[in-house]
Image (cartoon, rainbow, N blue to C red):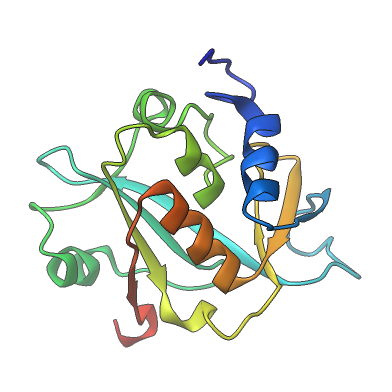
Length: 167
């Protein structure tokens, strides 16, 4: 597969075709920052791409206002020493996207399937209303929690679902 700096391995069309083959339909609109979202639906999610000291990568998915205690998370996941945010080079090497476009949809570009996915349990009740960038930080797409899990399962990921609010 060819890579490019805008859409990654296979790009946005490949992502949308994969979702369509799974029977998952996305509602995609232009993305607006907090405070400019009047009339926009759904819960906006924070996606943190982290790396531990042994080079293991983690994608943390939670509500955008969730305060993530990285020390608690490190202990909870038995990660090696402290977390750091992955560099732009790591982000591109692992997910073929640029900073600002991190989302679970980018996992489609990680052919090694070696990223640990951690999802906040508090996102489960939001059916058809989780917002993620579809490989482009200028857009946001709505997906249900169940469809997100089905997409991740299709890719070969087994996310850890934990309560980030217990930190």
